[in-house]
Image 1: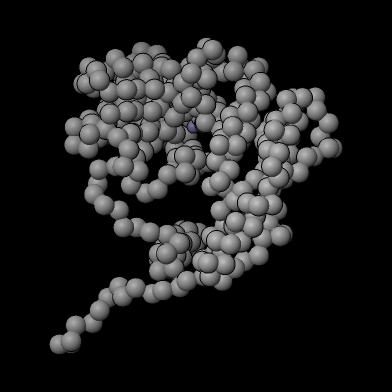
Image 2: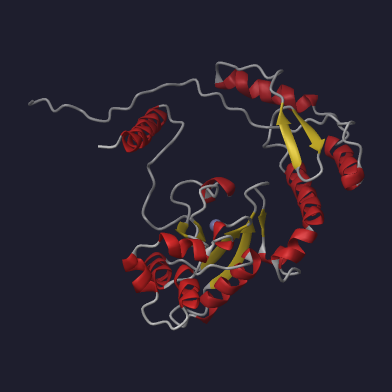
Length: 314
Ligand SMILES: [Zn+2]
């Protein structure tokens, strides 16, 4: 009917074929046991297309529930799903995951009113004497994404339908850096402005967290990378020039142990730490080379499972 939409449909269907091919190659899987998530968690987040909850927490399908709407707000329909999640699927922990640069913060209600159909216009203003207030109530727009997280968490806590032993917390995602900030990290800031003012320091402490993480997970992360100190975030550039693709698991293991032996006894991350501790004023030109181990698993096996077996009688 419409070429534009035909193209979109094709993108989706082609994508699904690629997914099927990856399942066959065992690069993806879709065999998940049961509907009860692996973790008893439900995350309510915004519909912003930059947020991929499974990706930012490195989860797998079936790990937890995700609910989305514009602005990650508590609504009657959210409550409906939350109650199903709690009582049918034993969810014990709710996270309101807001994000920076949320479109609901910049929602121009007056512009919107010009675009609404007459029906929508009438419906929203059904009971109100102040149409602007009715619009605010209907769209649940907000001016501050940090305050909004707090407000939504409070709404969950106040909802008497939700059992009191359910843990409810807020988190903030930054689509520009990929960092998620926990409740404790947001606590010192009552609003977005305060948070934004201190953002550089906040990212700096995240950098130390990441260094600790790399330090304690060296054995699992194998590879050769360069650690850069940049003004706002830690960037790990992949430098795989020297990693040879090996054809068998045995060779791969020995390649990994070779890589591990190459790591100097003096922990390279300590150097990086020293470097980073000079903070935002550090000279960005001198980049210390450190080796961060990283597992590299080449996909060389292609095996095609029997998806459909023709019965003998046919
Ligand atoms: Zn948003």
